[in-house]
Length: 317
Length: 291
Image (cartoon, rainbow over all chains, first blue to last red):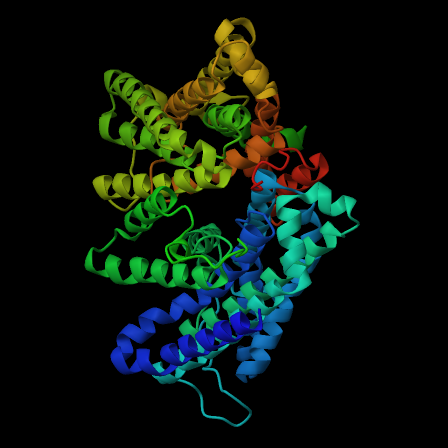
């Protein structure tokens, strides 16, 4: 068991180093900038993989905590607080708080009902983002957000490669924290209540509290994703946080083999590459390509991208 | 009296909008009831009707009639396609089916808008429908009154089919208890497929009829899907009578509500939807959770 944990840790470090140093050496700045949205979309997708894959609660509303995190970051940055770690902390807390407050409504539901409750919550937040003009700038959004700094007094991160590395580090840390939590008793409790809820309840486990914790964690991840979105595009508007975003995030998690956090991230990269790169060669057909990807994923990859490689024995879904 | 008079036009608009939504959403609620599957391509079926109307309506009655027939048939074919595509995924659970319909919606929406252009399309209805009449002292477009009449007739006919015919009884039985239907010798999957086709036809018909209200455009599929979901949820999943009441309520919120409480109305629909889902509790069971 310890050996396996060490292999995984080494694999994660190698993957992070690869993303940090090899990828920027191979790709030019423009392509790196194209990859940046994958981090913003990837973290909410990791949250969906926890909530839907591990805890069994389908969600179409991760755009909501994503929006809360994004707007919190944008407002802080416009107020002059451009220190990255503080922005991230604030966005994660805001997303988690939103999820904690709305979670009791979500965790009582299951199945399609949960899907629709989350969808309604997401639409409410997107509506608020479009109409609460004094805070969110309405449909015009908030523009002119100053670049993020690594620390107090640091230089603003404007260089594409530096920005990319910042996104990679944040994503790797968030992913690592997620995997640690999923490996803890809480992760097992979530898997157990997904598969045999009644039995878990009968055994005295507090299924509702565990689901609420999963919800809050997914909210924090989505909030972090929102912060990265603002960092990466220096702009946020209601169009970034609506139904479209929630469904792309779900698609990324499904492509990644719903339940695998790393797979969800890979799914987000795939979604962003298809949406931005392939669609640039064939203008105006992003939705067609994404839809085809969706259909192909549902038919061909029942376990997602992550299902192609050998699953580790007893691996959680 | 002054208040009623001032708000008469939006109130009647709300009835027209609500009945249109009911025709559009009836198929969604029945498909959900019979198959427990959320059809996220439903809005696209509506736009199939809308784009057909934009292509075939040339301001003559013949063009409108042609559009009604062609739009209904095309959307019914779309429903059949969805039934055929989701059938092999039945064993894989409901999430896979919902995701597939979403993928189909993206592909279909893109094909439609690339065939017709990116903007909202105008639809030329016959001149007689574009005229207006006096309604209690207000000028009111004939088209909306005609929409109310036709949609109410469709709702009545649908209710008759559902309550008085053998096919309707089969659909209601499948909503209530698919296992029992299966025991009685009818495959509930065939009922579900038939409901998808019929619901698609209704959505396409609504798309043609409602083209002047929610016209064909890149946003209309999402608009119709989200409003239909609100109607389906507020009306009680799988209930047609409830959907009718909910649709008119949603229509009033979207028209009268915007006039009376412009700050609250945009939130009201989804807040009501979330509230209804919470109050009704765990209705659809544990079907999405893999055993």
